[in-house]
Length: 281
Length: 186
Image (cartoon, rainbow over all chains, first blue to last red):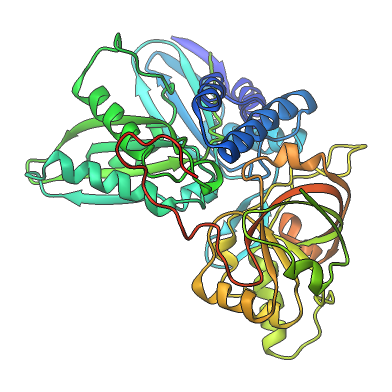
């Protein structure tokens, strides 16, 4: 049994909020650079260059990559042999508050979704998962709402053809169009229940965005990811929606077993500023 | 490439063509969802509004707080479409130009044409980069809204694209899928 003080978790969450918001993920930056070299549309290249410059200014000046520093989504994987001393939920929210204040991040969270009112830094949306072992993994994903607003869920019939599912995902991206800061990273959740499929779609954004080569092992999911990436990039949305072949940097799919009567599919889109940071205690 | 300085004239605006790149210098005012709601409500009820909108440039932006010694934090555009239902009322009150990201509704395009206004796009998701063009920023109205307050900003050579020109030409209108093996889209 390993004991982790809640105060330590607070400290780590605070650091992760700042890191995620100011230092763009390596896989995303490298995806943007590849896209820049491959893009043939002049204006699209100009915009991609601005996006890449933006990331380096943010890192150097310790200024957020985007003014929408998101709704902090915190994923915690708790090893079953870990004991947390203190209040975990409170530690996470205090950590978020501290990180957002110290990092000069924006207060974008309002306490009541209907009454609205003045915004603050917390609470975060927290997903906890019990895993084996004696480690604790914390991931902070500050999710911007320009892209979060484009989330879609569809409960397909279990006999639906794969083409129908592909069409739904592609249409979700086309619907987001120029609004949610393309080039996108498309998170897809397939299976589980309605709520779980949406969770999986968000969790898929945490997976590394990889470039497919011939060496990539062709599982059915990776083939679907590759096919979708190809067809989405033909939509000609492009950076800022002004055209070009860089509409999507990657499609990440997470699946889970589901019911004989159903086939839930969820799409959670991220803007090009896909930010997340993790630590293991 | 064109440079513009505020206050803009109707002639400045009418000379702009969709897709053109423009560098803007001068004063702009931020306003996003809640500020729009408040302004539109006040206009509807004929109440006094806290800033004179006539001839102004509105920036759909909610910046992050400035670090000490800096003019502003990150300050990129937010999704313009959420402001669509309030925009015709603001244009009627004399707003000349708007800066944001993404598509606008048919009604907004119609109102832009009617009032000879312009809709600009700025680099989306580039709040850090865009902050380097902002020399001054201070909240001037609805300060209780925090990041959603109206900030008066002084900008120098802020890079923009004309998204909808005063004749109602829309940059997003012509998008068609890339077909077959065709690689370049003009």
